[in-house]
Length: 414
Figure 1 (cartoon, rainbow, N blue to C red):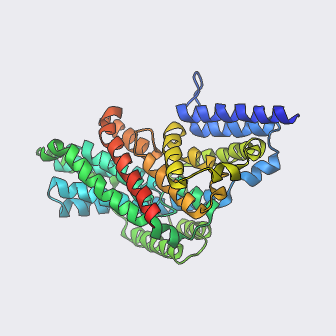
Figure 2: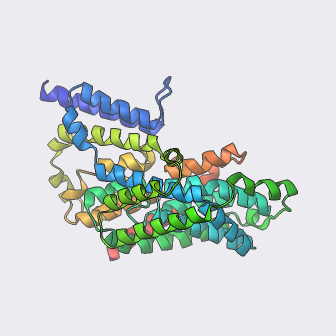
Figure 3: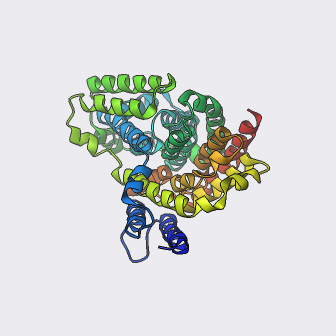
C-alpha cells in the first residue's frame, strides 16, 4: 500500500466514522454511535491502515477500567436505594421551589464531581420526576437544572465524566492537582446555573399544584425500599475510593479494586452488570483505534510542534475549537482529536485542563451536547415530559457562554 493510499484511505474512513458519530446514525442503517465506532475500527484494521496488534495497544486500559469500575460502584449505590433515600431527605427538608431547585442543582453537581455524571443522571432523573409529581411542581426547570448541573459539576474531577477520564489517562495529571485547578470553576458554574434557571423559569417555579393521592402513594413505590446494610457498605466503599483518588493512588487501579470489593457485597453480580453502560465502553474502544490510525497515518505528517507554536493564546484557541467540535461530534470523540496537539503546547498541563473545562461546558450548549443531557431527556420523554430542543437552548446558550468565559479567565489567572 502506497503512502498516498494509506493517507487518503485513513482520512476517508475517519471522516465517515465521525460523520456517523455527529449524526448519531447512518441513513438506512440501524447502527448507534457505539456500533459506528466499532465499524470504523474494524474498517481501519481490515483495510490494513492499522495492524491488529497496534489496534489492541491503542485501546487505553486505564480509561476503560476506570469507567467500568466507577459504573459498578455507582450501580451499588443505586441498588442500595441511596438515591431514593436522598430524594426523600430533599423532600422533607425543602419546602420552597427555589430551595428545591438549589438542592437539585447541588445534588446533581456534587455527585457528578465524585462519580461519573452519566450514571448519576441515570439514577437521579426518575427520582426528580417522582419528586415533582409528589410535590405538585412542574418538572421542566428541575430537569434542565439536573442535566446542566451534572455537566458543570463533573468538570471538577478526573472521574466526573468520560472525557475527563480520557484526559486523566493521557495527561497523568494528579487527581488532587486537577481538582484544585477546576473545582472553583465548577462551583462558580453551579451558582450561575441556579441563578439562570431560576430567572428564566421564575413563572414555572411559582406554580405549585396539589399532588393527587395516587401520585403520593404510587410514585415512591417504584424504587423499592432502601437496603440499609448494602447502602452503608456502598457508601463506605465510595468514600474510601474518593479518598484514595485524592491521596494520589493510581485512579484506574483504585476503581478496579473498588469494583472488585463491590461485587463481593452479597448481591447477585448480574444486577451490577445490568447497570454497566456496555455500549459506551464499546464506543471508547472503537474510537481509540480509529483515532490512533488517524494519528499514525495522517496527523504524524502535520508537524504538530509547529502548529502548536503558532497559537498566540492556547487557552482561547483550545477552548474555541473544543466547544465547536464537542457540539459537532460529541465531547468524547472531540477530546481524542486533541491527543496529538496538547502535548505539543508550551504548557501541556494547562492545555489538558482547558480541554477538560471547555469540552465539558460545551455539553450544555444543546440537548445533543452530552450523553448526560440525552439520558435526562429520554427518561423524561418515557414519563410523558417533553424537553424541547429550543426550550433547552434558552438556558444552554447563555450558560455555555458564561461558564466557558469564566473558565477561560480562571485558567489564565491561575
